[in-house]
Image (cartoon, rainbow, N blue to C red):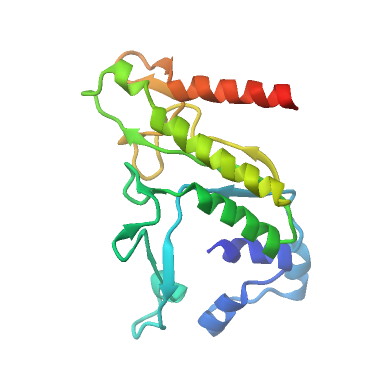
Length: 217
């Protein structure tokens, strides 16, 4: 999936796995289209939330589909062991080392572009049963971002041109898949009392982190 988007804008064509798996079902770029799309970016933005285990899977004996075309088994578990700590969102596992691997892979395969981590974050339950004071104490989010930023730092030391890291998100919001089922924000939005805003502990931690980095810079 990563190469589906990045290979054309960096290399001018789809990954060889896609062309070999899909055959005539995959449209081809004309020479003019290749010239237009190749290099048509200023930076690469990556959204990262989790990692998965994968293993090879043969071509399915059924009509073509997105899941079948991948030719891979994808799971958060291997032999019953999760790739990282399972999170509130069932599809997510806390796997900070995976972010470093993604950044290093992008550096190797795509000519070391400028990269921004445009989304990374962790959710908790949105429930009126949780007292406000407890909802604001999101130590798990502090640990999450601290660990992921450490691995971003490792990637930078290995030569990856990471220029920015954006938390998802700066305040609780409407989520694309879950609506108001969970909360991702650094700022708590009280939806029962006029949308009043409260800074979570993670918000203060991010502020302190940025101030420390500015001092060092």
